[in-house]
Length: 285
Image (cartoon, rainbow, N blue to C red; front, side, top):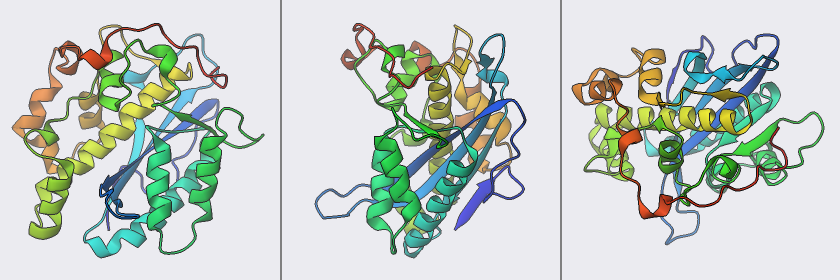
């Protein structure tokens, strides 16, 4: 498997500063085949770590908060069981280190990992159980916050797609990787043609998902904010992951780093028309 990280030991959590709340954001990419049982196959995942002040005069400005990340991608389809085991280890690390674990519709990612495991994975099973009980976590356990279901109090639109949630909240998450193609097609180009650029595009997309989810979760939990004019997630991502993937130096990606934020000025789709905001979930501070 191909592991990319800004941690000296990617399998371990970074050192947690005192007086902070640790957030671990997890996103899994998988091919989709609903015509057969367990036809969805995971091939890539990432974890992003944020450490935010636990007690401060005001919420942290997330544009100024550094993050750590680890990205894992299969080199061939036969490595899927190893990827699931690696993801289970990442979940175990997050459970032992983080105060808040998040993902966008994380239940689906966990279900795909569980269904394709080649052996029992108690850590994944426990994470699924904890997700179901996320509004009433057991004492001493990390809290789960799913940005698809638990951030409604921040939103007026009806769409809960991550890109729509981020755009409504003025997080620029423009995705040039998917222009004129699909994630499945990109992954196929990696497996059949060893197209490294295709793999890098998905890796960057996946880390962007984890990072933007972390930002939404931090905001939903009252731990962080960004400027009213918005936050260019691609700019933050490029600065922290510089040198990790050649795709980040491409002219196409470079155009995302200026002003204004492209997704912040995108036209509103009918699914994002305003509606009365929902109440915050009971577990949100």
